[in-house]
Amino acid sequence: MAAPADLIRKIRRIEITTRRAVLDTLAGGYHSVFKGRGMAFSEVRPYQPGDEIRSIDWNVTARMGDPFVKVFAEERELTALIAVDRSASQDVGLAPKVKAEVAAEIAALLVFSALENGDRAGILLFTDRVERYVPPRRGRKHGLRLITEALAFQPSGHGTDLGLILGDLTRLLRRRAVVFLVSDFLAEGYETALAVCARRHDVVPVVVTDPVEEALPPAGLSGLWPVTDAETGRTVWIDASDDRARAAWTRAAQEQRDRRDKLFRKLSLDAVRVRPGDDYVAPLAALFRARSRRRAA
View (cartoon, one colour):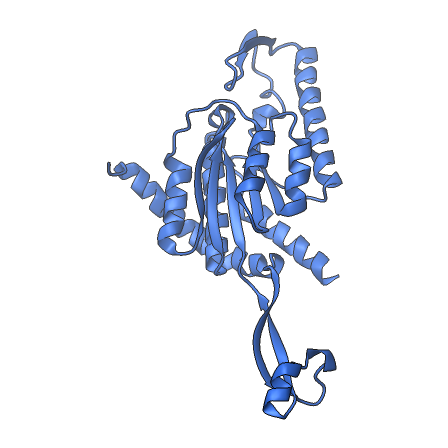
């Protein structure tokens, strides 16, 4: 079945805007920060004064009668996997744009950054299960498929199980990869799985939040407000005009952020934080610059 016209327009718009952002801002930073698997053998050439004695290829030297050295080059090829949370909490909030759409646009930026660098990119969409996995490959056509999946896919699950997903992800990726984990991280019990995944892969959390998850809207609300958990369907009523209730909401949200950020620091993970309406390019570029500075230090 052909994609609806509005979806095609949206994909085309995202391709144009994200490619421009990648070429103008992100590609160089991505290239300087994310390294390949190491050094790979390139060729042998005649020995030149100043070459390391340890680099001499003694087999070729014996065969040719003159000293030859092995030449190695940085192996640039990377695998980038963008894992995107598509649980029901991604489709709710008070911002004009829901988190699911923000996550899809961020995924587009990351996909095109990887492909522009000559790397392979793949996508994993998840809820409380792996909903869709497109293995990493190269090429513009493949990139457009990834963006289409991120925008158009309708998940069957509602909840979030980050621990399960991180375990599946670790098994799916047999070689070390850069994993961009795009989620609101409104989940529990994923700490051990994240630590295991971070030991095998370069994990970059991308935290997408709606303002209402941090604090109730400003004054003007009155009476009881029904607040429904999109993942479980459970509803609680909050008195929006009660200062104590508002303070408790803000305090609970802060405590959850503190636990999450403490975990990221413990695992030495560089996290990116965005909200609907933010400039997504700026925090990603800042991440690349910060990592590049640390590598050069």
